[in-house]
Amino acid sequence: MTLLSELSPELLEEIVVYLTAPSHLLSLALTSKALHSAIVPNHIEFRHIRTSLRNNSFWNFLTERPLLASYIHGLEIIAVNDNTQLETEGLLLPRSFPGLNQPCSPDDSATSKAALTSMFLALPLMRSLEDFTYEDSSLGERSIIEEFR
Image 1 (cartoon, rainbow, N blue to C red):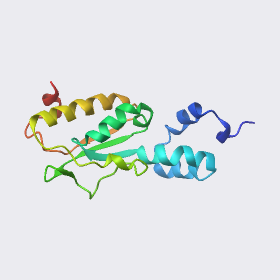
Image 2: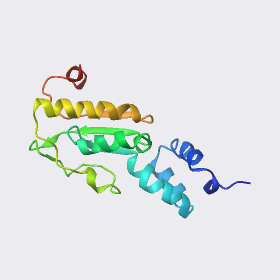
Image 3: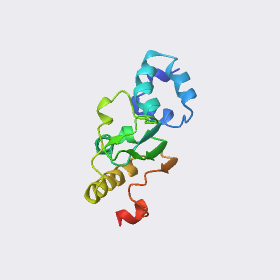
């Protein structure tokens, strides 16, 4: 009989991606050191993300690491405080990658367009995405889809 911790990393990833509740992920991670090292830094921290549209370091990070992007089940785009920094309250980014909480770019048309382009490159990589919320009013009355056209 093969133990779960003895499965190939690829097969283990395919199993773990279907566990949606963080409590189930944590329970599985606590069963062995091998499972913990595979689940905690990647799956638990990437299950639900809350960031700003203009957090280009995050969008670029995801496009460079499609496997990590595929672990995201929920994504919230939140408003930016003072147009220069991410709101620290309510921000939810993986702690294992500290460079993701970089200051946002200034709010101008070119920056917004570049950020939208980066986000739209990252979105298809999120193959497990089930919930998407957009609360950033930096584009004014236009929707993100209209801006991207």
